[in-house]
Amino acid sequence: MSLEQEIDWDEIESLILILSKKISKLPRTFTSITTLSRGGLIPSRLLADHLGIKKIFVDRKKISSDSLFVDDIFDSGDTFNKILPKVNDPSKFVFVTLFARCGKKYPENLLYAKKTKNNAYVIFPWDKLEFLNSKK
View 1 (tube, one colour):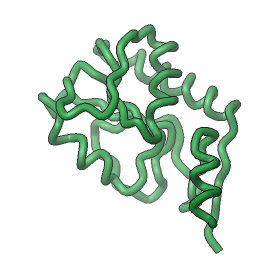
View 2 (cartoon, rainbow, N blue to C red):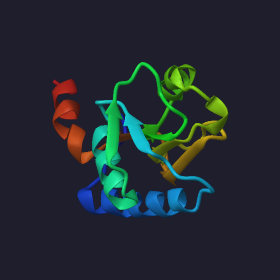
View 3 (cartoon, rainbow, N blue to C red):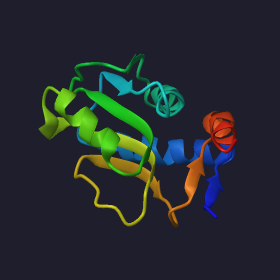
View 4 (cartoon, rainbow, N blue to C red):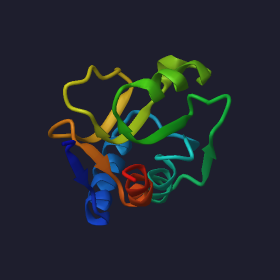
């Protein structure tokens, strides 16, 4: 039996506040947010509103290091490893997630709001239907 952890909107809003405070403390600003259409789009919009960022780019082939990259969870590291070669200056790249999977090795450029408590599958409000359909 697999573990599941369902996240509600109140927790999302709390995590967005935590992240926006952490991002605001960085010694730099960002001109845009870049994300993936699956997973990162909604957190990107919420962070953009909190940080006053007007531009959100989705599924880009090239990513500026002046753009904050947002995803919902850092899990296996696959997304990070696929994105990093697309960044024009990886040394300035910042990858932001709501959750970071516990027990993983995190890259230096990862900024997250909260670690998972276990290996439970995290179900975000925007992917409930996708999760239910995968169980059929």
